[in-house]
Length: 388
Image 1 (cartoon, rainbow, N blue to C red):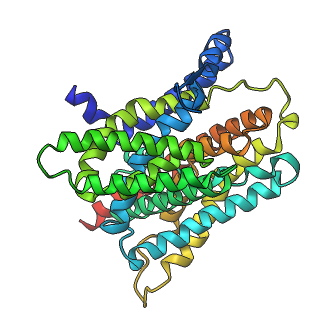
Image 2: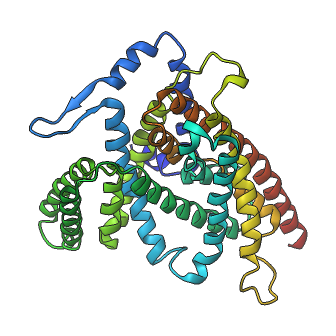
Image 3: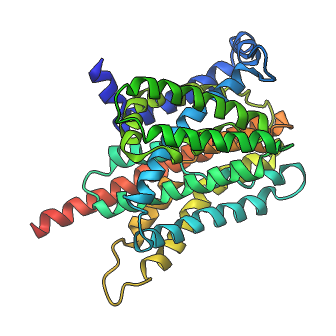
């Protein structure tokens, strides 16, 4: 059991598991298995005595994925307070590169699909899947300097922050301010309880935190803001000392169950029986903006960032290292799939094609990044051998 949990904490295996789950979802959606699986995903489950009534698919994207964002937020808190983003000096360069990795994909998308019903999809290609990106880096990047991983990690974390802001601001609807205020109060209570955990009877406090966390999730869901934001709020509010052990305990469940289930459900779309010319502009906008927009944006803005504050010193990363980071940044996957579902929630036809665009764009970026990272890592290994 411990071996399987350790495997799920590696960077390579969860990325492979995600890819397999998404491929399986796409495959089964286009076979005779579509109708029974679609019926399960569309089946509604309600909580008696409340207004909460969600389909299984929404329980996955709104419920299970909130746990994923809870884990992400705990890592964000650590990086912002003690890690790679804990000072302006550390955060400035990846922040500039991340800005390019957001702005250029938006521009590319709008150039291709900025008109009519597809215009709302511009946030989709802005995301980077940190698990996938670091997984590819771990598989192909042996020999790369630590600066590349640190840069990519900070870049992906900042992308997560931007994605969270998009979800919270752009996709809120019919806000209920009372529920939102009560949710904020609940988050404060959760934070206070987390700071009492080292005391005796911590299991009682932990049980109270679970109850408060579920209530916060229900209040955020009912407030009109996407329920995953509850996970973000709770993760950021949790005290650092119990946050890291909690993250460590949840990581195998998130990597081994929650994310693969979400990937399967999100990729469960029927491939339209049309010619390429008849595909929605949203498909092409995302499929191009993820790999191309990320590479161009991160590389160009990264070059500018690398020259800020150097004072005659040699840049920590070369343009080839930045190309590798940019290609890895184009693997949007998890957050991009969620954004696709949110951006086109009222237009299932475009939504399905947008999801296909995420899968195609992320796959292109995955292949490109694997090639570039492999070549760059081989160069660094040769260079190290010559100089040693």
